[in-house]
Length: 119
Figure 1 (cartoon, rainbow, N blue to C red):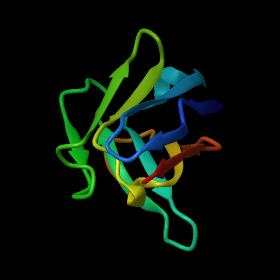
Figure 2 (cartoon, helix red, strand yellow):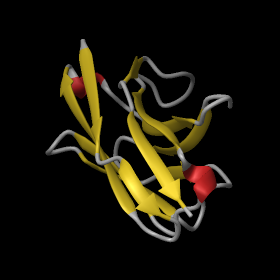
Figure 3 (cartoon, one colour):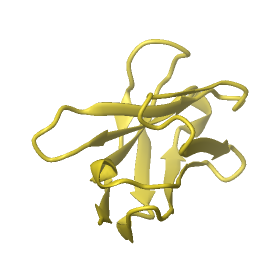
Figure 4 (spheres, helix red, strand yellow):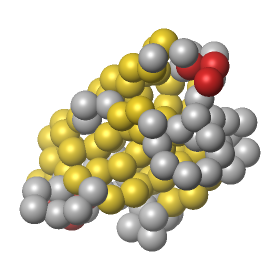
């Protein structure tokens, strides 16, 4: 089994920055892609960013490009999401997800960390 625990969320003013962390434990050697998703109140679950096992490949949602950076430290079993130039519309519950494969869906999910951006 794999456990994902997010942290780093909070209240920040528009234009500010936050760094989210996702601590991974359990059968970490089986994991390939790691990703961040978010869900705002009344909205659909939304992809934010994904990173490959070696960190050589990343992809971002259009809303995150140029402002967010996903990274991973495999030695620490941690995935990060550095967010800058935050906007009110970034307010959401941010989830970490892990996949056993290089393509397809995700097999493990964290409980989420709340990010609230005030104007």
